[in-house]
Image (cartoon, rainbow, N blue to C red; front, top):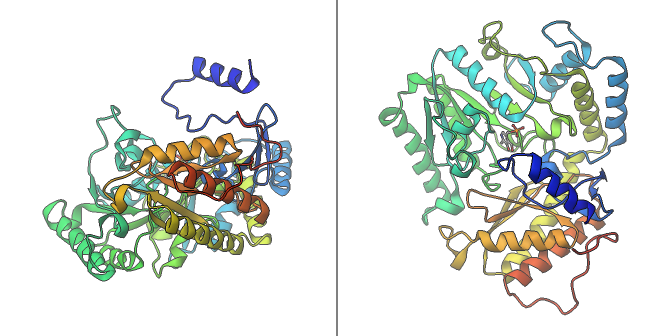
Length: 450
Ligand code: PLP
């Protein structure tokens, strides 16, 4: 019996099926953008542990920071004894992401927890309970996270969900543009929101509006800048806290520290996780001091939040990102992916849209060029074949009909090109576009096709 199969069988026997297994890959060790499985097969990693490994696997400085901090102090609970790495990380994040005149930061363990706390803080700061969120959104798997999350596949049978959650269509111009101009579309969607504050939930009842500036799990849909500007104005007018969920978009993924830096809009509160910790579980809520201090003592925090080892990892990760200028690298990776994806789109009628921001790039597959007719089956097939050839990539989108790139940003040009070559060949093959003559090669030298 193969070692990989043995581990997958043991997994199936002892772990609940509810925990997704989106690829058959196993993992033994990893470096940079290369993942090695238990049988020694190598993968070019275009998934990055779902957007966590922007700074790369096995990043030496991060590993050293983790081990040095672990030698010194692993845990006290920040409520019990104050340690410096927590405070230093908050200072660093407040410098990187100023929210208004004074910024405060709460550290927690996961993206979902950050979202939960952002909403709790907004509710206490405003004395209101309503939260507006969007279709296609993903905000995590806790009860409130799930209530805010859109895709029903993530939440079937888990209700009753948290009350006071109201959902509007995400401004998806490709999917729902209905032949309008971008300006006309943005006007329509902002009017929809204005009306909702009259016919669905009173503005003075709404604590927060939470939105991903670029939807992650929803399929890398970029919100039109004018929509976010309009949203900012509406929130200001009604005293609503604007929360940007930057869990997937943050820390160089889009070519900037924050996706919101691409837009002329600042949130009141924002949520962060994933690549911030270089692989360790740590997340943050960042916000204007006066809003953050709206939370009463004892209502936020937790035993492990801002664990010293995770803080040390995050601080080292941020240093690495600065030193390697990963924002510039993300821009270059995004440019290369976008160029290649546009070429694929020109040849492949099933590719309906190519989009993204920085290195957050995706292709959407639809039938007959119709965004209302998603083509998820072919996406599954393409990704399965890529894995067989040593390229690990993920789908996204409410219908699972989007292929997205979340590679570590330390990926070499050569690895990226090999990964994209494989992806392109499999897209053309699975969608029956005649490809260039040569037979498919494994993308990595050490990969054995299974
Ligand atoms: N928010 C966004 C935008 C995400 O992409 C995710 C995870 O994919 C979450 C929240 C939840 O994060 P976590 O899985 O760390 O709870």
